[in-house]
Structures are given as structure tokens and as C-alpha cells.
Amino acid sequence: MLRVVIVLLAVALYIYFIIDVVRTPKSQARTFPKWLWLMLVIILPLLGGLLWLLLGRTWPQGGGFWRKRGPTAPDDDPRFLRKLEDDVWNKKMRKRRGEAS
Image (cartoon, rainbow, N blue to C red; front, side):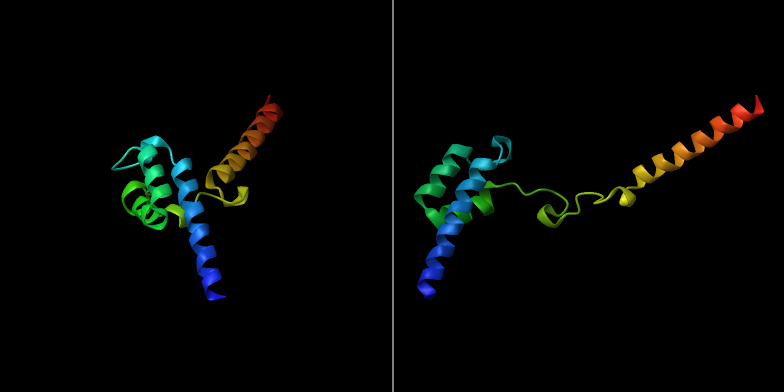
């Protein structure tokens, strides 16, 4: 049973490495050209994939996967809230100008 789990995990990693190389833009591949990384990952399944992660792939700045990507809702976005306040203020000013005229 443990062997089956290990083999399935190895196959899943192998597929992940191939997909990751294919989906990474050419400009973000380091050390070798992207096509060569793909060949390494295919020919040396786990070792090639680990080398890809360590030497070939560029990692995003500022936290990568766990980085907060921005506001998740409009009421968390300070720019959205500021725009609402500005809209309310503009509406008030138009109303006052209309009453004063």
C-alpha cells in the first residue's frame, strides 16, 4: 500500500513538473532555455523537476504563492472607499450649488 502511495506521489510530481515548465513564460526560465528544461524534466523525471525548481524557475518577489494579492472585497479596498466618499461629497456640493443658485 505504501509503495502505491509513493508511486502515485512520484507520478503526480512528474506531471506537475512538466506542466510547470510548459506554463512558465520563456522570459522566466533561468540557466537553460525552456525547451532544454522540458527535456531534462522528461528524461530525468524527479531529479530534472527538482533541478527545475531550484535552478530554472524564477520565483515571484514579495511572497509568491502566499502573497496577499489585494483586497478581496470592495469594502476592503481603500481606493474604492475613497471613491465612494468623493462621490458623496460631489453629490452634496452639486446639491448645494443648485440650492444656492
